[in-house]
Image (cartoon, rainbow, N blue to C red; front, top):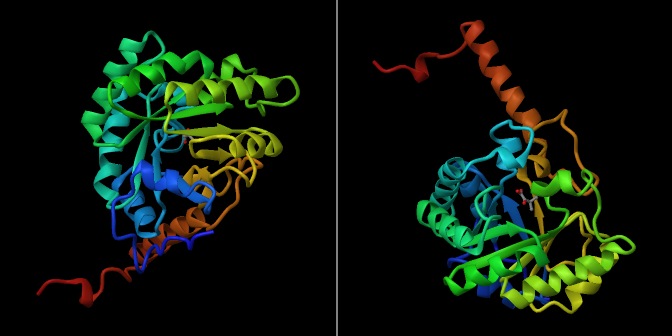
Length: 277
Ligand code: KIV
């Protein structure tokens, strides 16, 4: 195992590239975290998080839609560009929004190049295995870096019978086939979402590209979480089984806002030290 990257006080001195993450395979696990704006990107970059994902989960946690399918290319572009401006060192992966790549390989290449030009992100992510292999190959042919996303794919929730673990029993062979297809198509990395831990460990062991797990156990090459889950931004919100809370940011923010409101109401803010003469 190589030493973890320094982070925060001694941030990584260089820009992280896909090849740096590939080199970590078999060395040590690394962390990916979602980010959706300049402030969160800067905070996580300062913390040494090596890879930021501008996930279409922004639809839910930032824009308040009830499905990831609602977010548009324009909305993802604004969020992605802000993340790139805040990410001094981290590699930035961005989700291709639903409806921008399903129709054809040509549509996928046009959409991905538009998204990368608008944001400056480094890698595009798209959902699907076997069914998206030709899209991945076309994106690689166009010179783009690609992250695949298999297992549970939120954009297809209505086709998967709800929010369900994928790859159990007979589904294990389907997951293996999806992984083989995205690797053969040239994907640079792959996300496994809600997959049995033993299956994720087995396929990671034989996989030449980095695997990134969310609800896929400890043995993938990397982990990813939605930051609003990781830091409990919505204290009363549902937390999936695979989430661990690393800070109570939602409570802290509410307390800060309440403290500010009470100080204004009591005439305790501003005081002389906050005034211009
Ligand atoms: O959109 C997102 O945040 C994602 C992660 C759940 C991997 O795709």
